[in-house]
Amino acid sequence: MVYLDKRLLFDLQLHHIFYLDGDAEQISWVIQTNKSKAEQSRIHAEMYKGKVTDIQSKYIALHVGLFWGIGVFIIKNEDSIKIMLDEKIMHDHLTSSSEIEDSTIVKKIHFIKQLIAQRKLKIKFEMIDTGNNLARKKF
Image (cartoon, rainbow, N blue to C red; front, side, top):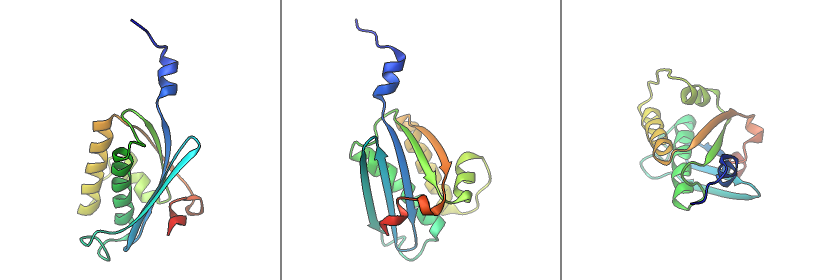
């Protein structure tokens, strides 16, 4: 039987930096991993297009981007992800148990947390200036 040092196991796990953005018409995300970068943008599905606020759209971008990253095998079980947020309200929602009255946001947070738990992802939320949001530059 072969035993691996825990430090070596940590190095085998991938570390990602995840940027996201959205408005009433579209969403975008960027996933940086070591020296690679995956960039995506999408027009909103008809059920959301022109019907969501910018904050709601950013939650949709986070949900869809995480789901996409898992689906194309960029993000794998137990990976570490630093999610870069340029909205303080999102940071507050995602790092505390504050009450949220927006049902769209509540649903998206539920699905985001479900993905995180199912894949045993290690998540850290970090605030950034809007000018440093790589996903914003996709618009």
